[in-house]
Every structure is written in C-alpha cells, then in structure tokens.
Amino acid sequence: MKTPRAITILSFIILLSSSEAKVSISCPKVIQEIAPCSDFILKSNDPSQACCNGVKTLSDEAKSQKDRTDICQCLKQGLSGIGKYDPKRIPQLPKACGVSITLPPIDQNTDCSK
Image (cartoon, rainbow, N blue to C red; front, side, top):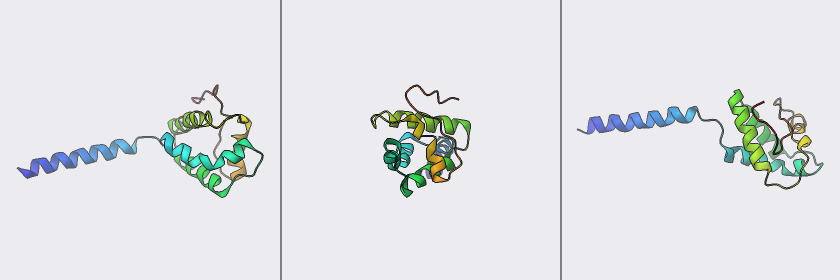
C-alpha cells in the first residue's frame, strides 16, 4: 500500500517543480537584485559592482516579454518606496553596467506592458 502513496507524493513534487519553472522572477528577488543600485538611482554616482551584478542577473532572467513586464512591475513597486528619484536614471543603469537590457524610465505612471 505504500507504493500508491509514494507515487502520489512523487506526482505532487513533479507538479510543483514544473509549475515553479513557469513562474517569472519574483518581486522580492527583483528588489534584492536592484537594491544596491539605489545610490546610482538617487545620486549621480557610478553604479557599484553589486548593482551591476544585480542588473546582469535581471537581464539574464528577462527571457520573455512576460518576464520583462513582471520585472518592470516589480521595479515600479520597489522604486515607489525609495523617495524622490529621477526616472531617467533607470535606463542608464544597463549601459553604465555594460549589460544589454533595455529599461524604461520607471515611475508610478509607467505602463510596463509596453
């Protein structure tokens, strides 16, 4: 009787792992990766190595349009809590870090679906 239970548990694990593979990057992960960039976003400093590593990670995660939309939404949400910043600094991040991802100027009015 343990065999059917083992099959049920194994099936459940496979179901969970396959559904997780379809999930886009999480907002906490996006915020964690971009957090070291706050000095760059708020001031005219060069981005730190930790910031550039985070931008690279986000670039690697942005495989589909949905991934890019989700990352934008997470950035929009996260940036709302850092205070007054210049949204035009956001598109400068990838270039300053030598990463080939395009980020729009993100503020509360940004339409991340575009």
